[in-house]
Image (cartoon, rainbow, N blue to C red; front, side, top):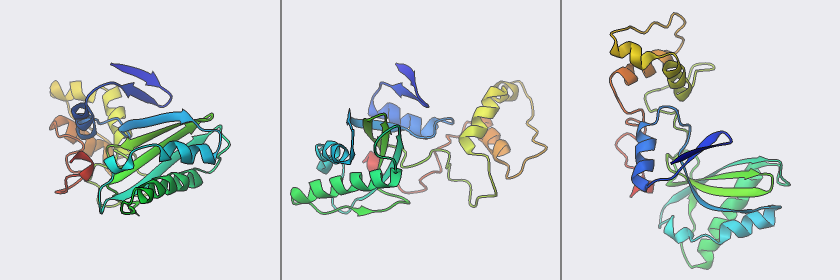
Length: 208
């Protein structure tokens, strides 16, 4: 069951469905698992709402943490400050329980949290993909203003590339730049999961 929301889609399912989405979705930018939603008029309410969660169920000894925040129409106007308050709440909660303080790793954390704070309502989620899903793992370096891979996939689907390939058609990109459209088109034609190379040989601890 799926319902459209602001800049996203809400989907009901099991953890295995989320795993499939992370591995196979060519269009999604993130796959988020909401943990809690609460009224958040100010930073104290944000801290309190986060502190109520059982963080020992999500973070083990030696695990690292990172927080992405998106705020709009609220008393908290700085996303980075909101992310810091969430980190403080998680760390303080675990310390009060006598547990080890998690370290911060912004590049490849074991647990990446996502805050969506709109008009005084906060949603705290686990980013199951560990970051933006347009990072497929095949791009070794960024060119200037590259086309994001999930946007390229959307353009190809909108243009009917899957059907064209099935009918024996070819894909031509006369202004290929970094080749994103062509590479995404080839991955579609070969039926390669877009998330297959994202993590290399490391199984994300968030799935263990």
